[in-house]
Length: 254
Image (cartoon, rainbow, N blue to C red; front, side):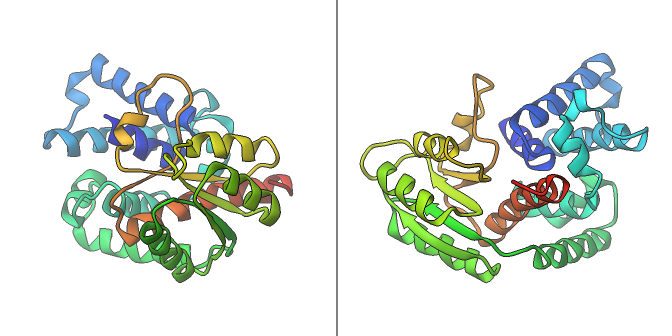
């Protein structure tokens, strides 16, 4: 269930929207157990989730009460299947064959969707990224992946104080932050202080993402799991910046 909640948050753009959509799907299954497909449990759960989400979208669009206003507007600009396939394979670690079962399409169609998603990512606007990470090798790996996507690394911070100072100096377009930092401080606390000064999309890094998806209180919406794969980082960063860029186009400001 924590993994499905992570997936839902990536698709909808927020903790509240993602969790609300998962709760709605569980209500559908509880009311009609026959709605659960005849697939292995994890594949069936993801397929059921996407089926309910897609049905709501097709039948007049997802309602703000289900997904949240921001996610509802952003989803209108999605190419849903391509991003769903990309996230299923690169973040949720399903095989192409499993993704095809979940999406109820052919494996060849999944391959085309992955190609489409990669092309879409390539069109995204590059931005400056602040990395808050106390492990040099991980920071180096993140820098390499981000630069292959065309982004610029504004700096690497190892402590809470360094993070706040670099953020206020560089005003990045994206922050990637580890949960625990070198001085024993919290990346969550550092990000919260940064967000009091200006708005910026944030992705957190954690070796134990399931411990952060408890359903109690505010939680990170976007998470990269350690150890990470390059394509997983690309998928998550792409989705986060997609929502941010959609919001910026609508309002003219972040």
